[in-house]
Amino acid sequence: MYFCFVLKLFLHKTLAALLTLLVLFSTVSFTVEKHYCGTNLVDIAVFSKVKSCTTEAIQIFQKKSCCSDEVDVVKGQDELKVGGFDDLDLKNQQFIIAYTFNYTSWFKSLPKQIIPNKGYSPPNLVADIQVLDQVFII
Image 1: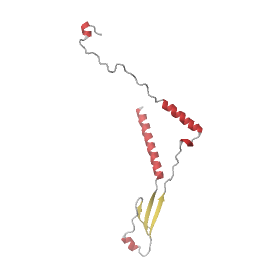
Image 2 (image 1 turned 90 degrees about the vertical axis):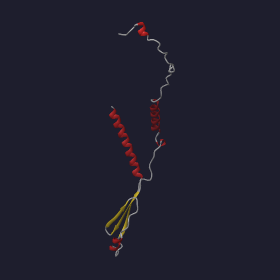
Image 3 (image 1 turned 90 degrees about the horizontal axis):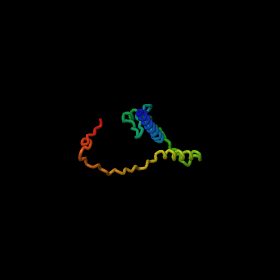
């Protein structure tokens, strides 16, 4: 029984983390820059500037201006649709209100128990009455 609870909790947290990452990665934008000298790919940069051709490559390809930069932009989602309570129709609003009221009524706290003899301390034992009267449970 405990294993099922732990498994359910683990799956719930894993699914919540995956959905969070999905929203994060769908809204992130980034650029991929590529630098070519001739047909040779010299450098690729994702979050920084690309390095240009080295001096050796410039001397080799100096006759032609064959160095080129290519920029690929991966654009994320700009807007996320966030629905509110007012977007629901009347039947769904009534259902959510009734369900919430019913669900919260399960967790009402019990009245506080009053213990009348909470501060009472028993008297000191002067003599063992069972031994004096010689009454023993056998």
